[in-house]
Each structure stands twice: as C-alpha cells, then as structure tokens.
Image (cartoon, rainbow, N blue to C red; front, side):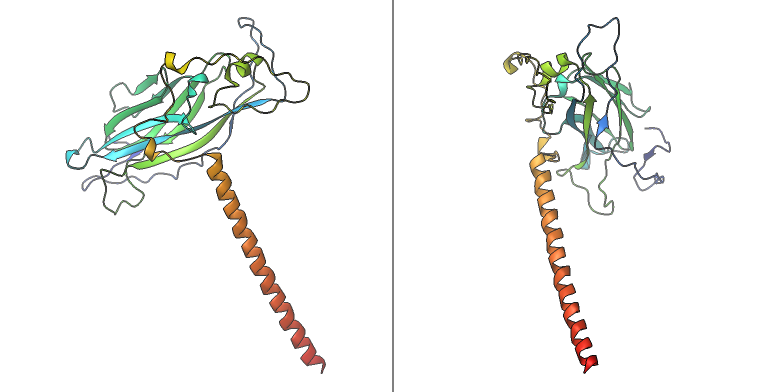
Length: 275
C-alpha cells in the first residue's frame, strides 16, 4: 500500500498520521421517492407508506501473528449484511467496494449476496461502499463510507490472532412511497420491515417466496464470522431501553428522598429560629 494521508500506518519505523474523527453514522437513511418514467411499467405508488431495511456494514480483521510481514499484517473482511443476518438480495442487486488505490483492481463489484470481500494488508483507510437496488426498489444508489479498522483501540496492548477487531455500523434504509409491486414482492421477506398500511389501502397479493432449496443462500446466519457479529436485534435494544428507564427511575427516587430530607431539615431550622 502506498503512503498517503487517508490511512494510518503502524510499525516501529512507520509514522502515524493524524486523522480527523470519523463522522457520526446515520441510523436512518431515507431514499428518494421513486420517479415515474415512460420507459418503465407503471406501478401504483403507496402514499404515506414506508418500507425499511435494517442493515449493518463494517469489517472484521484478524492479525496474522507469526505469518505477518511488512506488507501483510492482517486478513480482513468488509461487508454489508442484514441486521439479523437475513438475505439482503431481495432488495440489493449489487454492491461496489472502492478500496485504496494501492490494491490490484481496487474497484470490487459483488453481484450477489453475501455482499462482502476479503483481503490482506497492513494499513487502515476509508472504503466507499455503493449499494445498487433492484429496478422496482429505487433508481438511485446509496453511498456508504466505512473506515477499515485493523488495530484495537488500545494499541499499546498485545494483539491476538484469535480475537479479531470488529467495527460495525447500523443503519435503516427507508424507501418512501414504494410501488405496490415492490411491496408485494418483499412483504414476506424477513429482511424487510413492512409497516401497517393506512386505512383504505389494500395490501397487494404477495408474490410467492422462492423455495430456499432452489437458490443460493444469501443470508449470513451460518457465516464463518457470524460469532463475531454485533447483535443489533430489537429485543436487545428493548432490554437496553428498559434498563436505562429503571436507572432513571432509581435516580429520580433517590433525588426525591434527598429533597424530602432537605425540606425536613429546612423546617427544623425554621422551627428553631421561630422559638
């Protein structure tokens, strides 16, 4: 990998370049409304309806240990997956990963799920990820940016070949006013969150889901790296919210007791001063 200001170098003779702090990741990305075109088959748009697709994108990096050399210290995988490891192929047609220019063929195109690629290297850099959707989903691609992370946050500590560095971001791709054909095709797909339809809007007849035994699996439920994936399930999020609420209620109760105690002390002082 060539030297540059867009990535960080590590090693005894390699200077570390200061980088700006990464921008906060959006948790809800709203795509543009579908556009009508004379070249397309007309589909009815569902007003006041949104379809969302929870995704996770990031990387997992393993240090090569004794096999590491000056140019290849880590093996890493960058990916876009369903938040609960469901098949994203029902919505995403292909993914394009733009690597650092020092890699051979830095523009990598993945035409089918799982949308990922693996490489070996020594430097950290920003990877641009472009998602293209099926024709009935959205005309415009979605651009994501992920900073490849190879080294643990505590760089002074020992590195391990068994425990990887995992950096993931959660997002929800929101498609407003979807076509009835899009909704009919994905309403039984677990990777897609289909909302309750407004009053007066009839649900289109569902498209039969293809027999999983007749097609290539696109989910990541049995992925060899799935044990390292971050769990972004709604159940875990709900548990965190409940825990936070309990902590807030405990603090409120504590403050009320302290206020009551202070009021009692204040009343005692007033009683003494009145005597």
